[in-house]
Image (cartoon, rainbow, N blue to C red):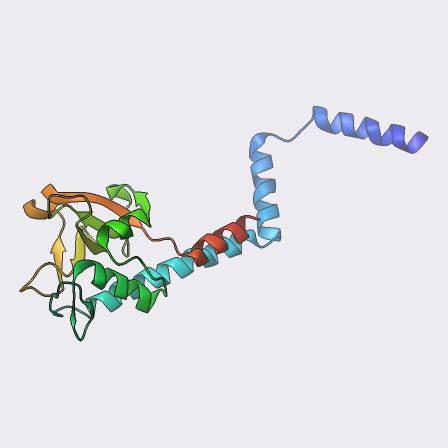
Length: 186
């Protein structure tokens, strides 16, 4: 009977002198490190960085491939959405829908200020939303397959033509990223 009374007294005294919030956050950080969760989150982040870098490097390798309406291979040529779809399939193993507006609907909306290499950028080039798509490569530039008679190229999004037609930015989240993120949080 004496032990439970002593334990209760210690708990009450401990509660009265609880650690400040800063100490609690340090304690939470220690628990996350001890359980390996911080390492898992860093691995997920590194994996995403590596894949987007590979995606941009791969896309750059297709500079000069001719535009072809409905095209989705380097041999036959690419249209804009066929180019984006092929790059994601080859480098990330993620198969996006075929049409630009379907790609927009299947991806996560982000603010233009949050763009990172590998994100998708959409433009209204045919008087309808999401009629053109490209891959953001950084520093305000994107790579795309623009139109008949042209070739895959890099352009500045801040040029007057593209700036007026910018329709939004999207991020592709693969199921692997979603699963890895959920696993790291558990």
